[in-house]
Length: 125
Length: 183
Image (tube, rainbow over all chains, first blue to last red; front, side, top):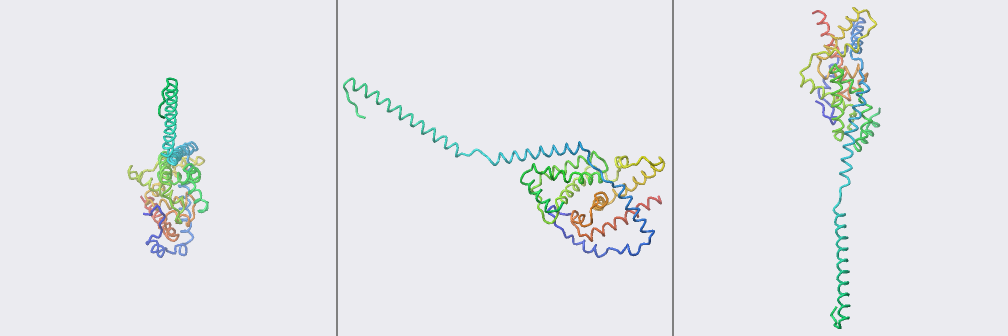
């Protein structure tokens, strides 16, 4: 059995090569023509057959569909959503929320100070 | 195609599966023919050809060039697919009528045509009784028209071994045909 990785060198090949008979030197003309006839009959019996154009096209499309799905899977795997984006977004949101809170507090203090001034009381900042 | 050119195409397809289409177009005819000659009918030849190329695409990254052409790898997948087909169906000795009908010539006299068809049927029966390896050799040599050096690469044997195997195959064929003539 031959491996798919292409390993050659069947040890029995060397023995087979050594045992090749010198047939062509001993065959008479008649025997030679018998061999040629047999070979011609084999060639005729095994005349090449092509696939129908419709089958060829259909299988090609099927393979292209499989290849597209494989290629699409590879693209998805290559560009996953990174946590870095999420962290950045959360950080920005936090800063905005914090800033908004500070603005609100300062605004409230200003309003309270303004009321205190108008009523004659001072408050510590 | 030179092996170096073929390697470029294979490597491209290994990076981008969509590029497999080029390899398919290059090899589909010969793979289909090989399978057809082994099975003898179009329906099974189409089915097994499809399985061969789907499997080749699925396992394309397993192929590594180590002196053996990509076509040899494809032939091996096809060869195994046919072997599994025979094992599953138990059809070792049946001749499909496809081969006879499609190859029949209509210009002869009906009696002569009948005789020719019968001879061809007998020869195909005998060929399909040969071992898978011998069948493969005959198909590659006489149906695909490959040289012994190319056949040797595909079958993973030396050129001398191929010549020897070929000679033994012809002797076996002739012996079997003569036996049938006597019967």
